[in-house]
Image 1: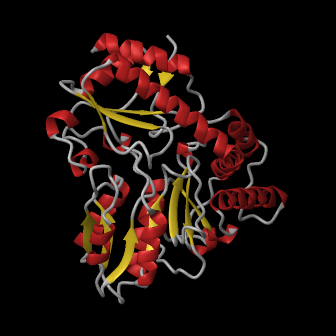
Image 2: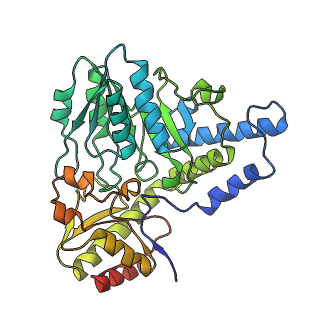
Image 3: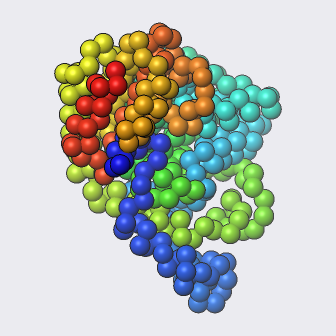
Length: 374
């Protein structure tokens, strides 16, 4: 049975170009990048080329990129790193109610350590309330962290405006851009971003590799002790092959960004049109205007999401009810709750996220099976 995959926000398939570029560093180019002989220097050069490619995608300097194991580690490093480094200045952090668990749970951990966190409301489309953001700032505020685009409903936040508010008050601004990088244009200089998290497995690179952009001049506390890797900020022998894979994926994303956006939006809109024609009583979550091009999140009245996903899987369709990182939760999505979706309706949530390997034929099959199951 052919698999039709509609969960690209959870993870993407590694592209052949990415895999091919990784292979030498899993076999013949096995040197430790900290070694001074040729094998080591080859690995070091590969890492620095990957760093340059990641930096190019988001328009920053190579030396502002730090490699991590994933988006969650990047988020942890940003929040804890700034909190501990600047705790003498203040202990207040601002974020939103619809952040990824990597942000929300890190904030919860910091609250246990004595930091204070304000969780800003969003409107019915998932857009942050800028006035509430301004009003939440006080003399103790040291960091604002707002995601670039939501992983469940795809809403894109007004990042440039949020950054302006932060900087007007001399506050560092971080954004979790794991879902956004590679799907929409990100320019950290034009958007005035201080710190940004990204992850390889959302852009056709492997799982287990991520990066954190930190604007030059911003100091943060390291919380992984050991060797001198990553400019003494992230200890541990570098995962050379996966770093190379991330770099290649970023190069491909930069090269094909406009074409990729158009493809995903076309597939997404086609899917929504077909679903509306075949299935009554659906509710679209979030705005269709300021939204990731490959994201579609709907609620179907009278449906249990878990049962629906199980039946879709039985006919070869992979989809989700929300964030993959929250798939074990029995309660309705915190994102849907925050935008005002009633609990009974939220239990029928279906997230479909499209990628480079999807086709209209896949969508036709999805809609046919969905209608049949319902």
